[in-house]
Length: 438
Image (cartoon, rainbow, N blue to C red; front, side, top):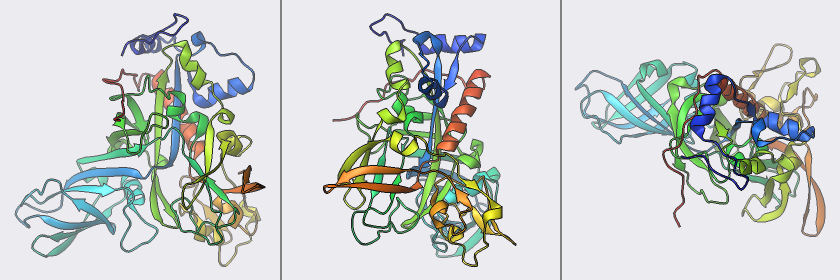
């Protein structure tokens, strides 16, 4: 892909930028650093930055993994007809591996355990990446059953694939009706009558918000997917020029548990993923989107039931002045017998301790649901609220749950920046631009 030329005549190519990085002369900034400079009133010119590292972390349902591994000696069974991994059903095939004692499986990220309503494909994949043993229950084509234990280190082929990830932006949701609704967009039944709001998207940090024309993101672009080097393979399902998303893949063996996992919603488990993408600045015109702040990025507030738009807000309404991380103060815990935070936490990041609740920071998604559930106010963060005029009424709707973890998106972008500067991660030109069918 050649360097793009804007109307000022300034341009550079990706190989030229990589050469500057190799020489130690390149300026690489994270999207958060760029935004901080803009908010401070600094003027950023084309020559001031060569690469911006972007990232997003959130629920990304369009995920599956392909696994292939040995479960028995050859000729001990003909082929598998059904397989459960920690109780989560996998699709057997496409290759039957007749009499080889090897399974080829496709695991959907949104598959639900048959024995645990809060456990799904996302939880299973994180457990695997953490090195935990998993139970494999096999039903053969002959009707016999057997079980084995395995772990990721014993699975030679394990790749995670995205079918719809990293939307340019997503939606905010409210329930105008009287009855609560079970939904993937809330960890609890979603209360009605505009009592609460949830939303998805990392706004100004999002990769495609920074490169909406996909000038540098294309087929073959190298990215970090859950911390592992992966590649973009094209546009995803429901992708459109005005709101694109991406497909891609990376090897599970190289992923970082902190960036992935399961998220228990009131409609069943969902899956979390993290993308970090470098955006080389090829021409001055690209700065228009690079320098955009949350308040300039639209966010549609919609009716949960019918996805009917109610009003348009911005990502500034939900991220400006919000705390990215949730704070926990154990000394404020009143040690409730029925801890409502423990019951509601979609990440199972809170457990019962001897004298107070115990939070696992590595599991916490910073969704903020604990804040409204904790009787002792031991959990705190500013999640903010949104003003919206609907039905002739001006409403102030509280954000009660975030389905994007911006704190770790910031961290992922910082880690990508370090890898770019040290040469661990190298920029590459896409082999082809992404296009959409009519």
